[in-house]
Image 1 (tube, helix red, strand yellow):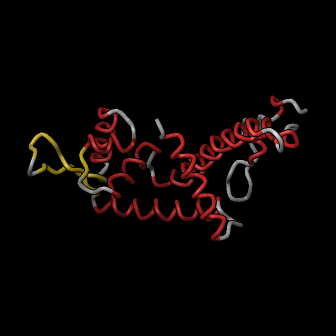
Image 2 (tube, rainbow, N blue to C red):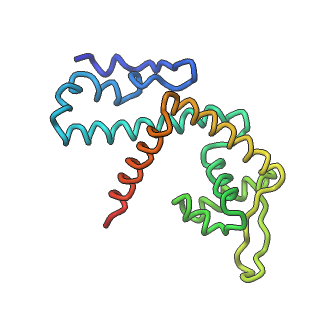
Image 3 (cartoon, rainbow, N blue to C red):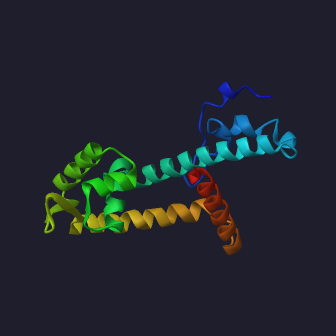
Length: 182
């Protein structure tokens, strides 16, 4: 078995993704036990769980690297994306969607308003609440973010056919439903 400490230098492939064998955890979990995993359901579940965590981290890191030229952070682009999907949402609704504190959402919205990407408008039915909308500049950034996301998805799912995509979506839906059960 190789020493995991030797795996400290990430190697990026031509698409900019950190090569899976160099990500912390994947090389360690994939080396000597792959043959043993074939017959051990608990080890297979653990391996799949670890791979999901690492892949999620890789996807986020690659997207973050791709959008750095737009001058937005991960926290900011998640708020922008939430407002793009739900124009007129309140700060509280945005915080709930993103599973962050309302005060944190407020600070992010304040910053994005100051940067000219979002705007708050008074709600007619509740003077205390404000609806949040994209500005024209925010809409432009959203279009750019969507294009970057599509390009990243093309890289991540290269080699997958239509049936593969249906199958992986169904499997991920099942995992999500299982986790969401009381």
